[in-house]
Image (cartoon, rainbow, N blue to C red; front, side):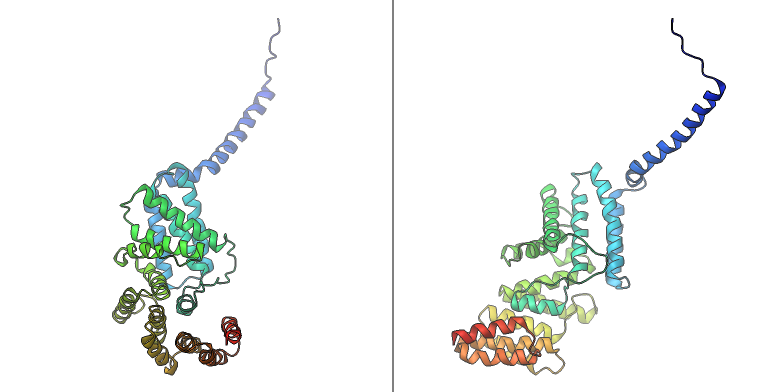
Length: 334
């Protein structure tokens, strides 16, 4: 009968050493694979941790002491945490909410959502351009915007009474606008549900940006004037609380709104007040002269309007593709 050969003392020592090496290696692999997951699951409430990270990110946004590149690194670390937590809790609305929120933070980092871009969006219908940021190689703006909308819609589908619903609606409005490049009136429904009282201080300027842009472009006169009024009053009481926009820029946005409601007399008065304002930037005065041209195009035809468009192009230094295109179109239609 076959009998196993007894293990020698030397072989026994080798086997024990192998086990001593294998056990720490196995523990290291397990820690690498499951450690972060267990850490986020048991060290603290993961939703509370995500909320704190969002609050920290927004505090950094308000203070403006951190570069966009540093903010992006912080954002990436949070996404790693989100992916781990989502594996265990895929149906919790808060997980989708924070995914959508941090996607929106990335949009804020990568897009120019300032007053100069607002004028182009509200007046010419041109969406905000990208900012060149070193080390940021995310998905396209259109895809990122779509992800914002999808995540927030999922939140509201899972919990229609979600506590941060105003923020979710604000992000859906941005996501749909930037993904589809269409100013569909349905965006206004989301904007109306993005109650300012339900938004954090860091997000108020972004509410102002899209509200002013959409209300002006779609000719929603009453909503536009209420929003402009609120921005002026609240910024006078608490500087920096709302969107940073000066009087000339705000008047120009109001002029766009008046034009789009066919209140041409008011639009002309506002445009000319901006044109004469010596404190206004060249870019704002270019828009004021262009608006004069748009008004006279409607009222008197291309021959009269052409002079204003040429004046606007000259004021812009002769380098404005949009104005050149308008001049070419008007020249052909004379």
